[in-house]
Length: 146
Image (cartoon, rainbow, N blue to C red; front, top):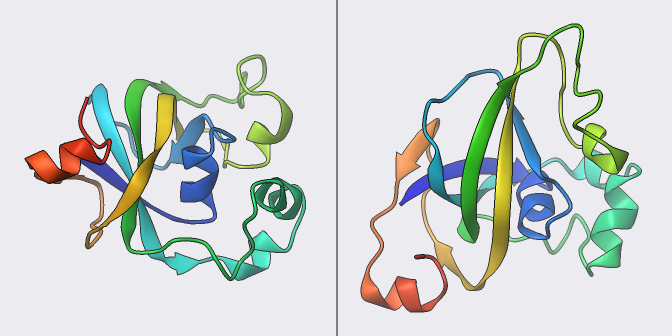
């Protein structure tokens, strides 16, 4: 399964369904199943700022209890949009979503669908870019496979 490593708290926001777009400096032609891996780094300063603090708190999270070094969710990478000056996310990004990403012109917004938290996070070493995680039978029972 394709995986994407994301720093905290953004990985958890995706797993909770609070963040539907992941913004990146690079494009991808890949579409399909995608697992979200929570990297080992936590941006603790951003966890203390709004709207991050209140959204995380609503789900029982703080900067001190975010999962790290594990695959935490799975869903689909549905589309990848280039962010242009005329758009900057306007019209297709709303609410807190805009605060959770970097919609600077020239970046890319990866539209995520059906992201579901795993019942049992899977320890894994993250990597840069998209990377492949081999799914075995035990992990498929944890909710990683489709």
